[in-house]
Image 1 (spheres, rainbow, N blue to C red):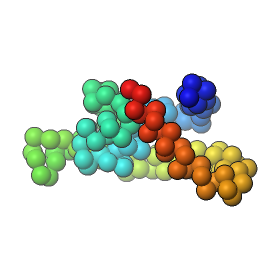
Image 2: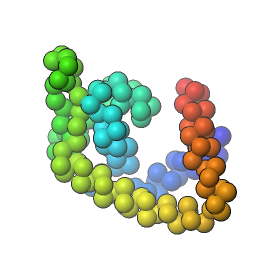
Image 3: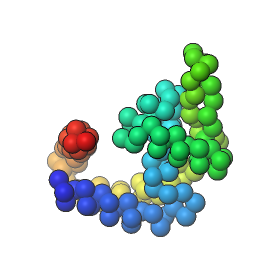
Image 4: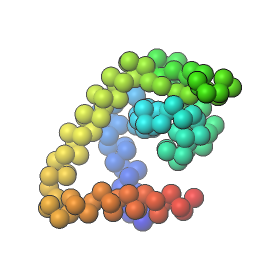
Length: 133
């Protein structure tokens, strides 16, 4: 498990040079906003495994950069939800493409059998690591 965490840290560092205009953590937050931003900060916090204050602080920076916007929730005027701006959508799509290109080489090096178990196994490992906190 420690080796897996170390690899994840190194991978993040190796991917950062691909992103001159956004950090890897910011990219993770943009992805989470796209996935569940309309459910609010708590949902994004759960999705990213970041604290709500961290999400709020990082979202403020991304909002200032014009990548996302905080808007009032339709069902509860006291609650704020997050959505990507058009620029944020474009940036996220472009960066996903870069990451996909890098990862596709690794993916295609796996056998069909390895590919069929890789995603469920990684999801299970993510759950195990999440439960450590």
